[in-house]
Image (cartoon, rainbow, N blue to C red):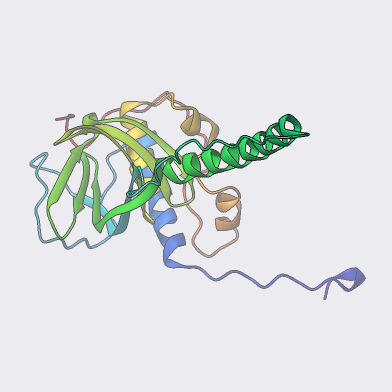
Length: 241
């Protein structure tokens, strides 16, 4: 117990997610120093690297892919309805009903628009592999390969989720990639393609407080700060394809 009777918070155990972040930070430290990261994990994939002769996979793990989609079967708009009261007070009654119906119609339209609005939905899942040259999405249907030059923008939305835009096989697209290795995808792309990215310079790509927590664990990382300035970075692991 702490002074004042407050209960001590239970210690958080080291998890697979923490291991992924630790490896991500070690790779980021090498990249920021202009060094070529050496593979630290034994990565076995059913497909070979394809962007460079010396390409090596740095990490691999499950991923979910989300895309912005309009929901199917959006409700049709209701047909206009009319009401006309006659006799004494008819105009007042007609106006009251019209106002009530207008309010109801406005609520229905708002609900229809809400239900018809595009939303992020899970469209695929599989195994993600990351190297210095790009990333690989291995799904039950296909193997999709992305060199870093094909990714046009990236932003970490929350821990374990990165929003990507890029030029895919079917043209430009926008996705959210959820994975323990989402931060590795971001930092590898940003250090090579956009070293002045605001999240890279501010350190906002790592979960808040994770580096300081990691420093108290038996496995401190060499990355002193998540804020990585553009100076000293360079392309590693081959050229963009």
